[in-house]
Length: 72
Image (tube, rainbow, N blue to C red):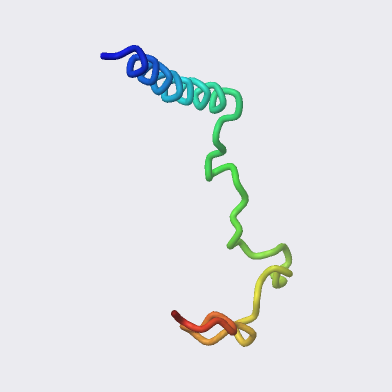
C-alpha cells in the first residue's frame, strides 16, 4: 500500500471510531427517555373537555385528500 492509501485508511478509521466514541459519550451524558415516562398524548383532558389541539371530525379534510395539494 502506498503512503497516501495508508493515511486515508487511518483518517477513515478515526472518523468511524471517533463517531462511535462520541455517540456513546453523548448517550451516557443524555440518556434516551423511556416512553413510560412521557405523558400520553391521546389521554383525555381533565374534566372530559376537548383539548385545544384536538380537531373535531367535521373540520377534518375528506379521506384521501391533503388540502389543496394535487396528487402527483
